[in-house]
Length: 200
Image (cartoon, rainbow, N blue to C red):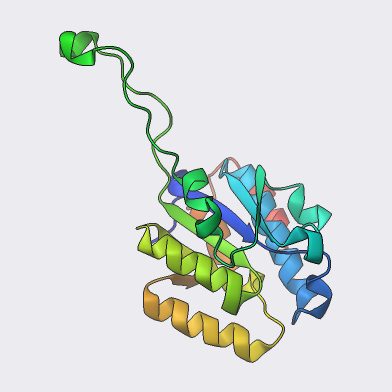
């Protein structure tokens, strides 16, 4: 099973200015998160951010925040508990008027883009906010893909323990380059050269 850019959304979890200095391999992780956000823009994939207790931990790094269409401030560790699920899968609007009274060929379709049920997620801390958000997304029947080289915790052991639990729960573990080239699928894709330059 490969990732499909037309069915995907990207969630960047808690890359906050007061949190990142104590994260393991923070510089490399941040660089990959920025690559993911830029890649998503090239591929027309929606990007969402979250910030845990921003009054205490500060906002997301400017390089991350600039890539997110919207950023959810939260106090719960799981962003789903604070409404992320409704952002990712907005409730459908009921048809206006008495649609049953019209013949089928005259009824207007509800419109709007089809739902994107695949969530590509990265962030920190992997074993707390990312893990709890991912578990809730899985429970809400999203396909969850965790980008391992764009995730971190204060310690490598905590991060890796989270990866074990996430894989066991049904999340797919991938890397930034895997996401990039699965979204592209072909060297003939119009964004291929731009993505290739981004990955170098």
